[in-house]
Length: 112
Image (cartoon, rainbow, N blue to C red):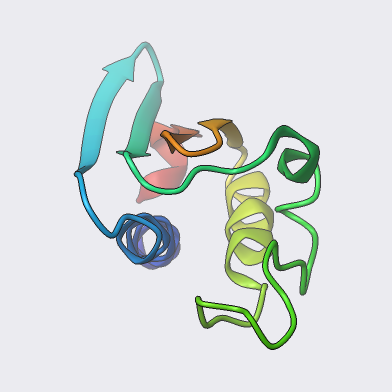
């Protein structure tokens, strides 16, 4: 359960950090033997060309002197690895300028 907390805290802190105005929603559901958790925001979104790179270690969309957001570029990489170790999956949908939705699916049996 500690790892799931770590994953959710990271996804929520990212959503809040990148949403200066608007909202962040968390939606949870179960289906069969899986739990699905969606973290959806109305923040800055992610460009389509960056979507395939965001789970790589140390990757940051913004870099250089004009960078507005702090971070190491490890959060999503660690989340991805933890989710895979728990037998789950993570998906991301995003539209630049409109927000993002991260959806994780985990087997309920692995959450104990």
